[in-house]
Amino acid sequence: MEAHCYLIDPFGCMHIDPNAETIRSQLEILFSGTTDDCPHRDLSLSDYASGYVLIYHHNRTITLENNKDSDAVIQFISGVALEEAFALFNHLNDRALDAVLEQPWKPQT
Image 1: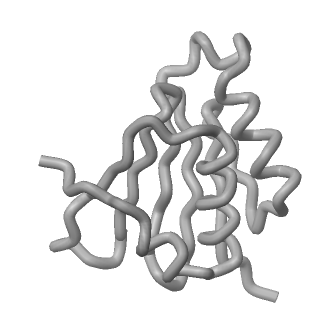
Image 2: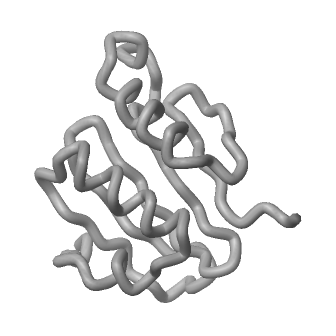
Image 3: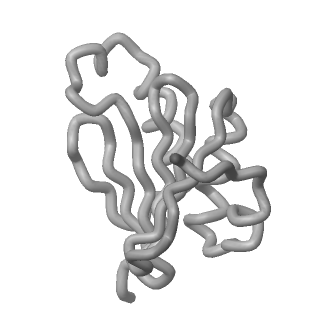
């Protein structure tokens, strides 16, 4: 079976086709002291087919990008709780794109 999603953790390690348990544990690690020295304190999940990428930052901002559409505007939501980020990551991982896209995204300017 061909991989469809991959997760990149704050240490730069790639997790191919992560399950919900891996997503949750990596989100929790993002806020642990072990990531204090990471140059990029974020966690990203990318979907190969759609090109969508969710990035959850340690400041609780989540961004949505599309790597397949060069004209797409990066969008964000601030103040995203860990559980909300977990739900969005699972939606993208399950290819429930409508559940991701219907969020109150704001364009990054």
